[in-house]
Length: 157
Image (tube, rainbow, N blue to C red):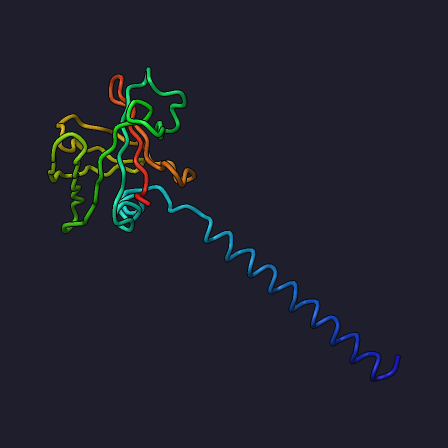
């Protein structure tokens, strides 16, 4: 094998190895970007505070066709009731702010208990709602049930 052929083989090998490295690197970066925030108190607090506003949907379980999703119909009778929430850190605590203008103006602040698997808060209505965090559900990552009511928390778009 001559010097030119040997150099060409080394060049082709190096080029192939470089291409493989680029493909592997891009795959790892893409997988990390698609990886949900890990479950845990700090992760859940980060998820809630990184998003400026949230929509909390609630509906009676006997009205909902798919318990994994609220009803988002065009008319009031075909829609789950909703309210807007914001979450902010105040020292080690997480504070929620609820605002609702559907029937009458309602606004309040409340403390949020953060667990490894989700959150519990009263909101303006006073009943503790426990929502479980599902890091794989990007549309409705927090869901819960209180008696006959279902709850979904989704980032406001």
